[in-house]
Length: 189
View 1 (cartoon, one colour):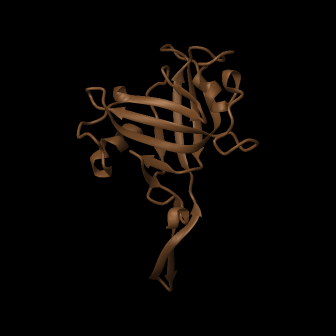
View 2 (view 1 turned 135 degrees about the horizontal axis):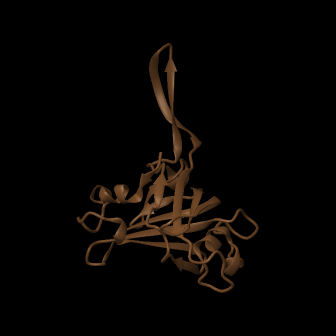
């Protein structure tokens, strides 16, 4: 199930937000990052979606013996879903800044990008969503590492054509610089 990021950030004060104001889609800035190359997205639709964040990125395993709970622990790794979309302004560009599609796929103007996992690895990027308060001051920054956008969809529409990207976060997630989602065994846990 997908949850709009705005709902997650609405509860920001619980997670250590820097502002007590509710966050709206119009308050967000989306940046895609791959090494030293950054694309600040201006054509995004404002519907960043993240699904599966949690303190641990491992499934809970419950041990039951003859109907009685005996203990619990962590099992296999779960992967957080990340979805973005943009209004189509250009399908491909020869020079940067190219469209979001080129950045998430490592093509066109961004074909020289090197995966955040390293050269020769599966192509991944980092995704940063900054929510601002109504004064424009940054207040919450959700940062997702090593996101693989393995597919995208094209949709023609009366309000503009749209590309939608679906991906999986292979790394960790942090909120305001504090890691909020990681797998077991990372950081001594």
